[in-house]
Image (cartoon, rainbow, N blue to C red; front, top):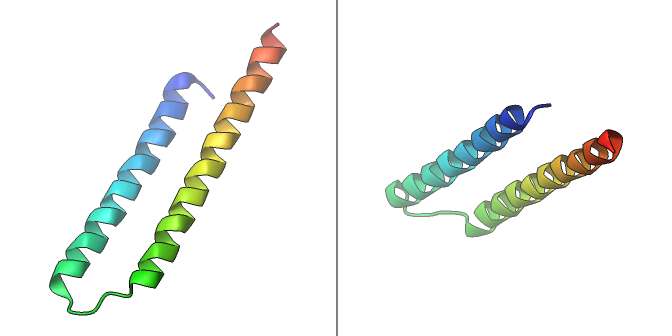
Length: 69
């Protein structure tokens, strides 16, 4: 995977997260009741997925760096 490919994947993930947060905020403005605990679970789930993605990218970087040496 090239650096441009990685940047594209991470950029798409960031845009998706931003749109999800925007949608959640819009929902909160239009509804009287928002399940804050559910929102918090979803947000933490997104954070966990982001961390796993970052860890995989870093692991791939390390393996590529060692294979080049």
